[in-house]
Every structure is written in C-alpha cells, then in structure tokens.
Image (cartoon, rainbow over all chains, first blue to last red; front, side):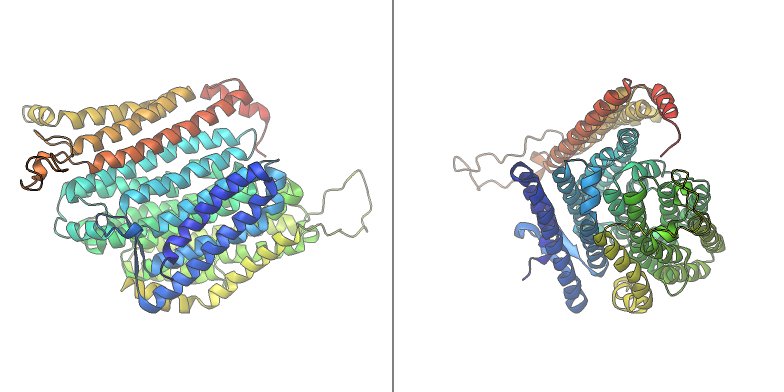
Length: 494
Length: 138
C-alpha cells in the first residue's frame, strides 16, 4: 500500500471527527475510537519508517497534484523517525490516560479525546509536510488545540495561562507567516525543495535574510527558546496531566524538528553557516538558555513546574547542537529529539501517577513517596538518570555527541554549559530523591505509630505498565543508539 | 532624509502594514485590559494578511479569471499573459490565514469569558492581585 504517509495524518483526523460525533451517541465510545485512530497512525508510521530505510525518501503527492503546484508530503529518514516517535508517544499516553482523564475533565472526556486527536494530527502534519504554508496552518492547528487543552486544566490559573500562551503563540506563528511571505516574494514558491533550489542562486539577497530571521524567531518562540520561553512553564503546569504528558515531550521537540528542517532542507547548510554569520551568536544564546533553564528549575517548589524549566534547558541543548554547524553537533541534536521526547515523557508519566494519587506535586508533598509508590518512583529515577546523562541511559549518548560537536566547533562555552547543566540536573533530582526517600511520611490524623509499615498505594495498572515500558525503553534506546545513528541519522545527514 | 522620502512613497503600502503591525504589537504588550490585547492581536494578524494581499497585486492587471475561456470569441486563440492577471495564490493563502485568525480569536474570546466568570475582571493588574489572594501556586 502506498498511502501510508497520508494515513498517518488522516487516521487521527478521522478519529477526531468520529470521537466528536460519538459524544452525542454515547460518551464512552470516544475512547476506543481515539485508541483505534492512533493505533492505525502508529502502525503506518512504523511501515513508513521501514519503507524509507529500505528504499529512500517517499514523496506523497496529495490528491495527485504534482509539486510545486500541489502540496506534497515528503518523508525522509528524519521525519520518518519523528513521525514514529510522535504517533507512538501519543498512542502510549492515551493508553495510560483513561482513568486520569475521567477524573480531571469531569464528564467532558469525549471533547478531551477529540481535541487530543486534533493536536496529534497537527503535530504529525507538521512533521510530514513538505510545504511551507501548509506547515504554518498545521502549526496553528497544534497551537489552537493546546490553547483549548491548557484551559481545561487548573480552574483558577488554566484560562489565564492559556490566554498568555495565545498571545505569545500568535506572535510566533505570525512571524513565521511573515517570513514565508518574504520567501514567497523572492521565490514564488512554497514547496520546500523548490524554494531550496531557487534560493541556492540568490544567497546574497537581503529579502532572504529577513525571511530567515523572521522564520527562525517565529519557530524559536513556538519552541520556547530562552528568553522566549515565558509562556511554557505556566501553560504546561496548569494543563490537565493527561495533556501535559504529551505536550511536554512532543510540542517543543517537533518545533526543533521544524527548525532543523528549515536549516538543512530549505535554506541549506551553505547558506546558514557560510553566507550568514549568525551561528556563533545562536550558540551563545543556546548556552545561556541551557544555564538559565537549569537555574530557574532549581528555584521551583513544584515538581511539575521544575520539569517544565528542564524542558527550557533541554531546548537549549538541541538548538545549540543544531547550530554548531558540524555533523557531530547535528547528530547530537537529532538524537536528542528522540531521547529527550522519551525522557520527558517518562518523567511526566511518573508525575502523572503522582498527581493521580496525591493531587498536588509540591516538593513537600512528596515525602516518603518511595515507600508509597515504589514502581512509579523506579520509573522516575530511571528517567531522571537519563536527563542527568548517566550511561547506559539514552540521555548520555546524545549529550556525548553534543559535547564532541561543541569541541569540534571550538564552542567550549557550550560544552561547559552542557556539563554544568548536567550537574544542576543531578542536584535537582537528588533533592527530589532525598525528599521522597529520607523524609518521613506525614502523620495522618495524629496517628503516632512509628512501627506501622507503609501501605503501597500505586496508580492504576495501565498507567504503571506504560510508565515502566517507557522507562525501560530509555535504556534500550540508549543501548541501540549506535544503530539509530548509523541507520537513520548519518545517512540523512549525508 | 531626502533619499528616504521617495522610498516611503514608492512602497507606502508596506510602510502602512509595518505601522499597523507595530500598533498591534504595542497593544498586545502595553495594554492592561485583556480585550484590548485581543484587539491588538487581531490588528497584528490583519497587518500580515494585508501584506500578503498586496504582494499579489500588479499594476494594470485584472482579476485572475481568463477572459472568454469557455468558448466565445477568441477562446484559446490569444496567448495568456501572466502580467495581465493579478497573482491569486497569496489571496487564496490568506483565506486560510483568515480562518486561522478567526479561530484563534474565538478561542481567545472564550478564554476571556472564562476568566471574567472566575474573577469578575479583565484588567491584568487586578487579575494579578486576585491570583495573589488565592495563595501560593498549587
């Protein structure tokens, strides 16, 4: 079957429609529909990845219109990997979310699943498309759904956090759109490859320079690169847990993918690193982002918020790696998209389990958690080790490539920031471990019985299984990262 | 200064969009009222839409419908000159962008309603005070 690339995106879209309709018939139907849609999408993404590894880039012409007139989905090794990553994380998260969605969205589970599916559709579309304007529309679909989702969360702060996110998100998307306008003005085309071909002749043009800067700023705002990150911590902290678990690992990472796509495919390495003289400045910006994210994470008292600042820090890793301008750095950045998505997902799964039982995840509420929720904490520890970068978890390998790349490019400040931020993460997580492990459980109802053993109160089995599976996958991906680099990333960069 | 004036006059439409865009951006950043910020957001998006619309324009060109394409005098006989027709693509793109901006505006308005229901105010400084009253973040 040749239609797998379209199926990846269309399956969740159709499922969203059906799940929305199912609410009118029977609310409970929407969950299996959503699950089916994402299962089909994940399966197609897997098939496409295999196909791309075997026989190279797939060009899928929407409705048979040939590019540059028509919109094409162009799937090479990079997006095939990201597509599989997005669809499988969305699917796994849905498996884990059934109970927590019922609790958190009180009777509006059907709408939750509909918006969820639309969000995933947007992300998958952003990843698959080969058209610059199509990319804008899909980014806006993703953003619109996440505005709605954030507002569904915390009653007091959710809508306000969401509205601030709207303002900043619109500025980001509009800058991108304006950049596309400048490119269109100069090239008369919107297809990425076509634009790239035309651009290779007009590298000196100042219109192209303006387009490039506008698009980059737009994408940076969307990916929350420091200092354009202010919307992210509030928006992700106050959204429903089931949504925070998917938006935190995926949204920013897909935006990093878009940036790499623009750098490599549309503008090209020659333009970005030889014609322009921006790379040093951006690597410095990334260095500051890494350090600032780490320092701000240190000052947080809420576990969820602390993790959102770690995302800000990790974005710095990927942006810096991509802008180092050598193969090692780019390899590290791409590998880190995969690894960071998995690590953040594992962390937020563990946090989701905690929220399910404890309702709040302020650090002081976590006392004695190792006794109460041992399995959740095991997953949390693995994910934390991966963020810190302890071998053989996957976080170590991408960091290794990034540091090697930094040395090759002579960007010692970036390498230094990477190492310092690893230390900061170590401090952060050991602070959490200390509270969870050594501090005694809060006494309940004045019960003073020091010999009472701790009762294990774990989250539902479905959540635990997914959490365990993802945490173990961190080690598996770590062990196979050589294979991933050799079969996917290096052939792509050649 | 003498060089700048002809530059502005020649491309006055673009300068207008820049001004509009800055008005929108200013309102989004500096205004205290959330609805004013929303209006600023809309002005900002509209400026970009106008920019796109005007890049499709050509002097002395007509709407992009081929004359007598369906039979009639001279169908397919005369060569079609692209310069005679304005470029429809940016306009079509903007139809989509308008839909996106309307949807964004709708979502933002709905959020503003939710905030008003919860706090009985849309002024940002008052909201900040109310939030401080609720106590530390959960």
